[in-house]
Length: 358
Ligand code: NAI
Image (cartoon, rainbow, N blue to C red):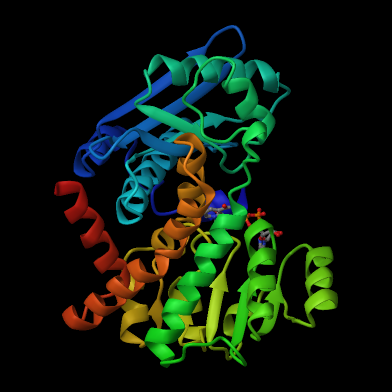
């Protein structure tokens, strides 16, 4: 919950009456709510845009402080998916769903049976997938009711490998653009979070000769990477402050904020976490400080590329090639940022908006 409350902090300041105003302002297509009186399941599916294809986006299963927070979370994430898929050149729109996790006992399987029916009612305009709090077994239950689901046990559905590969390509792009280097040999990378993506990324970077400093709230994960890769352990409060070439946030959202920006001693911010900027204007602050920021939804698109590949039965090589294209997409963002003297985050939004308007 800490993660979520940080991520939605600025969204919850919206007035309760303004959900549809927010939706209109951000050009939403549809917001669907489902309440199942038998099981008590409450779910939201937000579809931002289906211009480029069906709206693919994960299903979150976490607690929310109130219903509005859940709806705003689904909407904000759905819009992010439109942008992410547009820049990744996927034939997909943007959507996201939330099944609200109750604080009391509940029947998980029954919830996901009802949620599967809900997804199916939208006739394929929304395709669901894994997200925070959901697991492959939930997706398998959903698939009993609808074909519109992208992550299944039978798919070998963990997107983290593709995400880590994409983040590596992103770091390579940022290093070549900002530091004028075509190798990661000897560079110092600070990784915040050694979960699915962060740990894989650590291995990739180590293989390429980078020096690693790492932090995680889970000490066992830190110990594993320190022992295996000879990384240096840093406290979770200090990881963003250490002098390094690349800071890779791979844990929480909103870690780039007023306080951390003043403490950063890096030349590049490039990591997997979603919603890294606590507020849009933090992109400008990074730009003003001369720190190159790889916009989160561009660099972490490997996951959705992987999910789309499974859904459309794309060949593995094609999926890998598309993930590798993240490098070119970022170089395009960086070059335009320099040309127009605007933050990379703003440039990425402009490119995505142009594609969607196209
Ligand atoms: P995960 O849950 O496996 O790993 C997150 C790690 O961060 C955990 O090891 C956790 O202990 C650690 N952590 C939590 N709070 C921390 C703190 N304050 N300081 C340091 N470490 C902390 O998540 P995963 O899958 O590795 O994803 C990482 C980030 O990348 C998330 O923001 C996720 O939304 C994003 N992402 C993941 C994708 C994927 O394919 N797994 C795809 C796109 C984005």
